[in-house]
Structures are given as C-alpha cells and as structure tokens.
Amino acid sequence: MKQIKEYLESIAHISNEDWDFFTSKLTQRVIPKKEVFLKLGEVENQISFIESGIVRLFIPKEDDEKDITFGFSFENQFISAYDSFLTRQPSLYQLQTLTTTRLLSITYDDLQEVYKKTQIGNLIGRLTAERLFLIKSKREQNLLNLNAEERYVKLFKERPQLIRVMPLKYISSYIGVTAQALSRIRRRIS
Image (cartoon, rainbow, N blue to C red; front, side, top):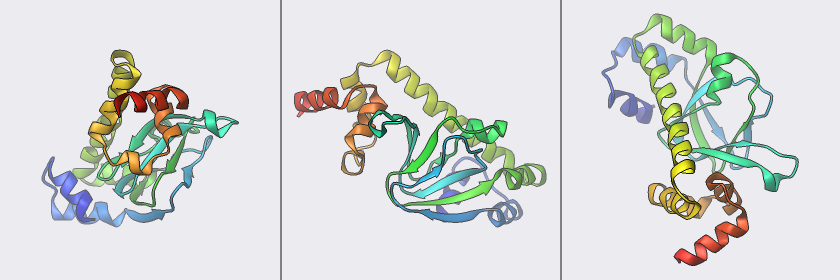
C-alpha cells in the first residue's frame, strides 16, 4: 500500500478518510509468471496498480508466434484493459504477466463508489486514463516517427531491465518487426 500512496501523493494530497475508504476497496493479488489474467472476450472488471512485476498487453493469434504485443506496464504503473473497463464490453486483447506480479486491484463497482464518496476517486480515474492515453500516444508516435532500430534502442534506454526478463518475440512484436529483423538489429548495435 505504501507504493500506491506515495505514487498518488506525489500528485495530490489525500485525506486520511479518503485514503482509508479507498484502501478498504483494494485487494492484493499475486499472479504467477506467464499467466494470462484477462482473456480475450472477457469484460475487464478491475483497474490495478503494479507493486512489482511486468504485464504485457497483446492480441492473441492462433499461432502464438504471431501474437501482437502492443504494450507493457511496469512497477508503479496502473494496468487495465481500460477500454473494456469503461464500456463494460468484452476485451479485444489479453493481459499477461511476464514475471511474478503483485497487484493492488479495485473493481469497477467499487471504483464507482469511491468516485461518489471521496475526492481521491476522481484523481485515480483521471490518473489512470491519462497514463493509458500517454502510453498509447507515445507508442503511436514512435511507430510513426522512428525506425525499428531507433524504437528498439529507445525501449531499452527507458527500460534496461527488459532485456533480462522479456522474450525477444514480444520485443520484436512490440517494435513492429519480425524476430529475424530484431536479431539483425541487435547484431548491428552490439
């Protein structure tokens, strides 16, 4: 709980009453490595704060090698299939842990109650929406403005720990190249 409080308090002051009500709605989950915890076609019912671990967002294909990875979330970030969460419609993608991941989660109904009864609720909703928008916008801009090698280098400058924990097939999908093209990029910059 300390991490999420520090994260939220870095943005705005939270009254003790609001904090107590909010935290009473959180549940802690520990999800094993490589587990899909939101499947294609399920309605997302939670927004979670990652205390530790890495989560991959991806569109599954019949051949696992052709899955499309389009996002990662890390420690001290929120994670959700947010479009499904907001619309209450089935998700068009999946969420999978890449490492054992510890989450603090709040359900849709509980978050609606937090919105109604506290000042912090709107802050949490806005922060989540802004974070997810910025990730999406940054990814789109990178795909439009950078070549594959530049996207790869940028990813590892921002998240150097990825090389140790992330399969290369996820990285190649994320930067929009084949595994063979990623191997050539890695040889060139080594």
